[in-house]
Length: 365
Image 1 (cartoon, rainbow, N blue to C red):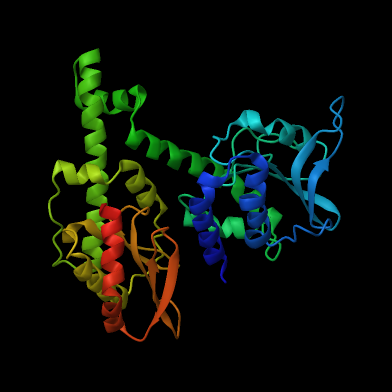
Image 2 (tube, rainbow, N blue to C red; image 1 turned 90 degrees about the vertical axis):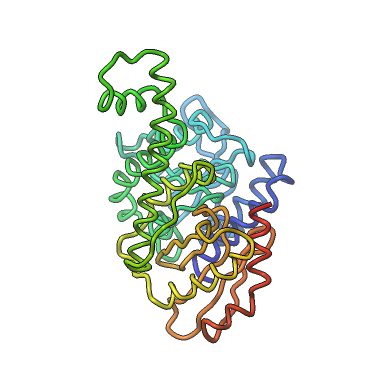
């Protein structure tokens, strides 16, 4: 199983089991230990690789423990501190990581609740853990641009120097992307004031603030929608004309989803004619359940995704046509777990029409 597939499988497990996980210990057993084992590739039962309840006395603080220490060649390389699943992660939760970071050889510290993994290093000051993570992995919404760096922390591909050298850019680019997504979802006063001052010459009163908060949010959604449509027209050819959206349709696609998706796209991705033909088949099948403009494509290096409302939380199918020999059609069950079906040709997609329509109906409901 490939790295991306293992990560997707763990993400599906998190989604399926999160409601049953009520304690920190259950979070470790159900989510964190599988992450260390299947994603990072370390043997959780080998104390030469993974030390649970790692202890290193720090000044007057004696007997404190960090949940896991990842070892390589007898040296601590990563420290992992766990919190209960679904509990929001705060920097205050990392107090033990801060203390242990300065007295071990670890250059990577991880704070996690089993769903979100915040990776820290010491960019701001040597041997002092930064306040902000350089990499945030959210298993509920995986950013595929981060996977090459995450892979470098695995046992098989461990390359600490490469990770550290890329950490500063990752730290600030990631933080900016999250801030853009947040502002496009719910703009704050400073963001609204910035754009209002460029187009409106009057005083920034409370009434003006209220009016332009709505206008800035609406303009942001429309702009990003237009960027998505431009990409569609480029991919499908000049003859494609994207339908105009009503306000209700535009609101159905959240600005956060669009912002993150548009920023995450890799300009080196090559969309093939075969992928576009497959997309048109899936779209035609889906049109028995929804309007055609709601079925959108999004290409990546690993697969060609077909989504409802351009929302990566509403996958309809994945066309995995990048293999040299066998091609696969990825379909989703009610838990959004993907199953790959080998296909002999594009016409084979029609054999899965019922499953595609059922997936669309679940998203609509």
